[in-house]
Image (cartoon, rainbow, N blue to C red):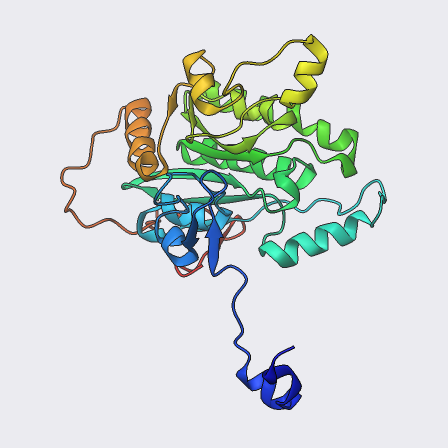
Amino acid sequence: MNWLTNVVRPKIRNILRRETPENLWIKCPDSGQLVFYKDVEANQFVIPGSNYHMRMGAVARLKSIFDNETWFDVALPDVQADPLKFRDERKYVDRVRDARARTGLNDAVKVGYGKLEGAAVVVAVQDFDFMGGSLGMAAGEAIVRGLELALEKRSPFIVFAASGGARMQEGILSLMQMPRTTVAVQMLREAKLPYIVVLTNPTTGGVTASYAMLGDVQIAEPGALIGFAGARVIEQTIREKLPDGFQRAEYLKDHGMVDMVVHRHELRPTLARLCRLLTKSPAPESAMKPIAPVAPPAMIPPASEMVPAAPSV
């Protein structure tokens, strides 16, 4: 007990107390280094000292990809909120409600349409903060709708995968999203349109077993955990010790499962080059040339399909 606790009245004590935001500092999971949150945010959520790639939210990811941080949100089909009336320790509807309030998203996948270095692209992002980025009916509908829009606009489709797998609260209905998304990817492939997958930390389970491993080009962020089952489950099944770095991005690249491992700072220009290469489009005439509007009138999808997203979002 100190003099402040013993002597100062509670009301005055509350005035003297400083409120510190919970996310003011970030601790690097790799090195244990404490870093100022604003510095990490300005560095695209990469720890400056260790180069550790933190998880990135859906909105921040879309801002980092699209020109002028501006895009159109794609309106996604509505699905039944709780088809199985599932309940464990809590009701499934309550879990979804809390996740929506915490993340500001309707579900785990957000789809945007805009320009990447002047070329129109459709981008889908899984947000791991929304129930572990789990694949349910809403997320499956979002991926399928994004692929359909890419077909309609004859543009590349880029997906950022981050998931713990299928959503158990929706049972077989969530597992059915695996073949549905696979069929939609095949439709894009038959149309000879680029499908690029960026595997982020972590990408596991049913997502890895479906659309996340079907890209024309497979890109991974450094250190990303990528696999189907967990390492402990595999060790117990095969009764062997797994090698160091197993299921990490660099290990998968060395063994042919991933085409390239790209630092987050180089991801945007790499994706732009791949889109130009796969669509046989010419490179921009000059890096100093002003960027055209995100969606010129001829390219804006119908109002029924799209909802404008504010640049500040």
